[in-house]
Length: 370
Image 1 (cartoon, one colour):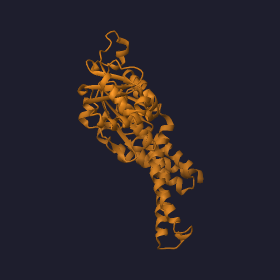
Image 2 (spheres, rainbow, N blue to C red):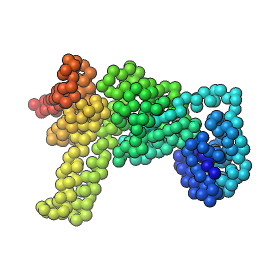
Image 3 (cartoon, rainbow, N blue to C red):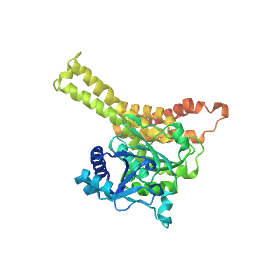
Image 4 (cartoon, rainbow, N blue to C red):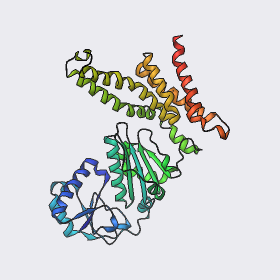
């Protein structure tokens, strides 16, 4: 029997995951095949306080159960659901309740967090669960530590009614140009999923990528991210460098605390890889991607140069952070204020912005020493 499982997001991700796993295992013995499409379901099991007022459930056998019982006795719970499920009819007069869920039916989403591990995937699961509970088609692309997962295709973008971006760092959203978009954080998407999806329907604005003429509303939304998000973007790109470099140094120490001092040895090579190369790139990468977050690709070059100057002058992480913000805002200022003939516009991102913003950042580092 094809079965749809709906779990109230208010019950928490941990309990929901446990219930889904246990019921999925018990479902094989009970001859239940769990699916995601409400239209094909022969039995609907709802874990929560109330059955959602969803017209797609009309005429289907629906069972409302307690999640604690489902976790404690999954096989008995499924047996009760099969035997006692009743045909469901959505309330006709429930206009206010259905008004929120009558919005977009095709949703695409992107999730990303500074480390690209826990919150990225937990927020994605929360959005998927809540959207399916409402009967929506949904696909979530995770921008994790290993790159984009479950990538959204151009065809899926074109068919989408709404784009939800739950990200704590700046991510490339160019492919969603011209689509209604709502931006939030992974924390809110995880803890207040239902409320955030309601707000997404009510507050979504047409998205225009940086570099195009964006509306004042979308521009204000981007600026509200502030310095914190730009800093987190830089940190997220720097972290793999820290981890890889630190592990190489640790492996070097495994041969002896001072073994790396012996030339032409494995310990010396590991120390050079970790301490001499990976750690040397930490500050430039941090500064470069802070600038990238602020000004997009034109900010990357001056940010990397500023970070390298911070290392060479001994100003360290603080100098790198300052260099990243300075490079980003200088590049953004030049990009927005400098007007060139159409024939020369192509020179701005590859010559003019990197050259002049790098000069300004470099001279700002050099002047205090004179």
